[in-house]
Length: 453
Image (cartoon, rainbow, N blue to C red; front, side, top):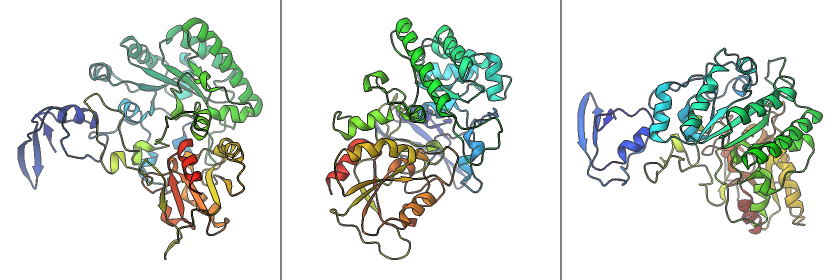
């Protein structure tokens, strides 16, 4: 595909706009020949052509060198796509990735405003220019926050994030940053303060796990500023994710405190949302969830981009459907060579989840009073460090855990740790030593799966 109506689209966004028009002309190059195809279709009618990448031109990579960057903490030997550091506003719009705006330009601003590319997610980390420069290890770090101000001035919805590194941008610096947000960026739609993630491959001496006392200090700081923002702006604005409450050994806020769960995908209010879904107190569900590295290896069906009408996702590549299909439970056999027998529906059930997820799911399952259902925490030895979320589980760790579990039981695995049927380490559900059922990562899906036992 060379062009649509004479324009070479740069990405899936522009492609969607161009192919939404009636009767487009497609310039095709095939076997060395240039062809022009006139397609008869109505405006808004699907073209019927799938693409296999979100970006058709070059990915805009990140030129920061943040000490806390998780990409630097990946083990060797993974797929090449996982090592790409992006700082591309288009992936922020399409997938919810966070951009620092250090490579943002006037042309980018014009396109965002003209095409309505909203919402965007921006990594702030600190509003003091010197501290942000140090955080990003980039002297443009502080000055490029002017683009955040420009986006807000043009009515773009922006969600912010602060990765809180102990001893670097917590304490008084975090207070100063939140004061700076109130002073300079009060139009932010939401802001989350997330804890530093550490893998066993971390080589940065200053990067260390957050202590219980430090987690409690951050939660207290955030909750204090929520009162300030509510008084001045009418809403809480800033939130701490579930991981901070687990680290601080504090109960999660009530559902209404999350004000619509705007940053659910970033771990803010996931526990309360899961509880509401599991107990049937809400009919809305959050699945499918994108998980980590979704932009690199595919994502659940359905794009965020709907400006040009309903968007039908390609079957693989750019928007790969997970093994569960994003609907109900699906069976996936494991055990290598041979036929794995499907467990009886009345068999005992093991719910696989990360160690952090087990702290949330465990009490809910225990509340059912069913002796035939248990939660199985999977320790993440592959990444190690403080890695405990379900979205970063890999097949190697799941297989090790399952190998110690009884044969013939039903094992439920959330789809957030898969793209297609593949884990981050490249293994698939077929490599697991026990058959598993892949279910969407929401409380309602788990409730339905357990009701079938």
